[in-house]
Amino acid sequence: MFSIQIIPYKLRFKQPAGTSRGVYQEHQIWYVLFLDEADDAHYGIGECAPLHDLSYDFDAGYADRLAAFCRITEKEQQVNAELLRDHPSILFGLETAMLHYQQRSWQLWDTPFSRGETGITINGLIWMGEFREMMQRIESALERGFQCIKLKIGAIDFEKELALLRFIRSHYSAREMELRVDANGAFSSREAIEKLYRLAELDIHSIEQPIRAGQWKEMALLCGSSPIPIALDEELIGIHHPVEKKKMLETIQPQYIILKPTLHGGLSGCNEWMTMANELETGWWVTSALESNIGLNCIAQWCATLNNPRPQGLGTGSLYTNNIPLPLETRGDRLWFEPAGVFPGLKGFHENYE
Image (cartoon, rainbow, N blue to C red; front, side, top):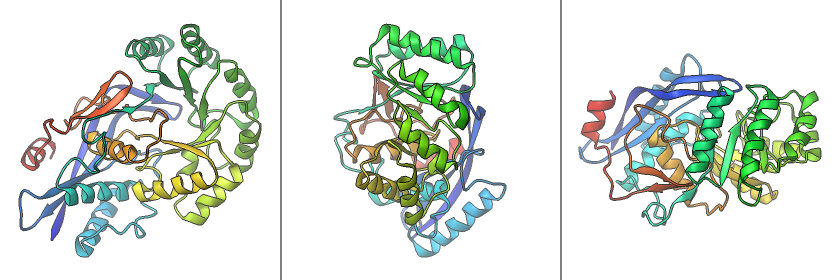
């Protein structure tokens, strides 16, 4: 039998993280601890990390709702994924805690990645900022050896963003460097196609969410005519049931979808998305959504079971000044897990993070 304890925690960014929706300075999350009532050494930790301006399941009553679902999970002694379909960040946190509790280890699956034998190829993420700041971040990513760079666009002048992309292309061809951009819905449907053609001149691999979510007709037209493959991200938020998922994919027919367990239905919901995408020959890759290392560890280890050769979006572990220390390390353009590393024990977790 296990009980569940909830620990609120506020992550602080090392530097402001900018998107076209605004700038993040800190991130309120909740850790859920599964505690074996008969064995103090047996526990599991998960992370509920909603994004206040993006998550479908976040509002002023989030903490109370999380507590209620934890009580239900305690009573049933299992995670009820069907009950939690409409609460993706809570579902993901409870799924992670249950995996950790059942495995009695931070190695949640047995893969070459979890054994420390290989790393996962990831993209270098360039956050929005002033032109000079973004240029410095690009130069740093190039120096670190990334062969896939993702640039967030839509917050500064589009001509300046094109200049940043031209800088990369002046050093690396499309064969040498994969360039992705993420507009976070910043373009209007009227201007989007023109901007897509200008981006195509720079051999862009794909663009995430060029226009805001919910415009299925307009997005379908873009996916059918764009010179750049389109990847859906925010479009998946709030679509939780299989019939709705299939309808959206068949209507819009995107080239790719981006899978984020915290936003898109937990692990179980993302597995549904992936299965449908495979059936429709739609590509996909996995991305974290500003979780701390607790959530990132689960996402990375799950991702390693999927055998997707594309660069994944798992480079967010170094964003915070007060992240939970786990032996996850980026070396070059790969994320590594060190199973012999130092892990937070339950006592230390209580002392440091309550």
